[in-house]
Length: 163
Image 1 (cartoon, one colour):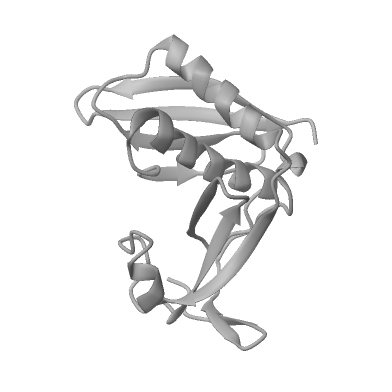
Image 2 (spheres, rainbow, N blue to C red):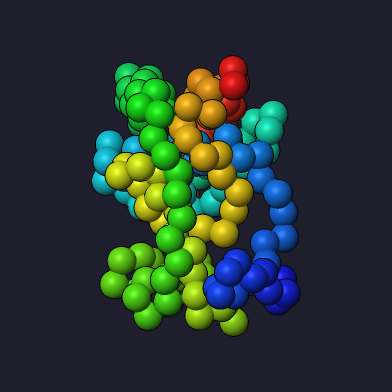
């Protein structure tokens, strides 16, 4: 855990230890919210976001059909095409408890947390790097996916391109 702090105006946040690929990381937010809406699941249980390809794991009851995977890809690209602004909000952990799952917040996290909004489509706790508008993401493409029946986890690999 990185215990250094970043100062943003009067707000002190825990430092972030890596620089994500901004388009892919912002796209992750859209994919998470789309999975919630299409499958009624939670946000990804594991994520690895990179420029060349990224992967997200979701706890699901069953493996999505090829039609559902295609629908997910189309829905994410439709949201990207809305050219939504990506903005931030700073609130206290106490204020965040009523709005967000705080389980992933690291022990010893700063009392101020950052909320990232993708237009009115998604909001979540996040310290990562993002684009300013979804128009900067490009095209989202699921390049492969597989199902772990024992763990009931669906893994999706994706990339973004074109912007």
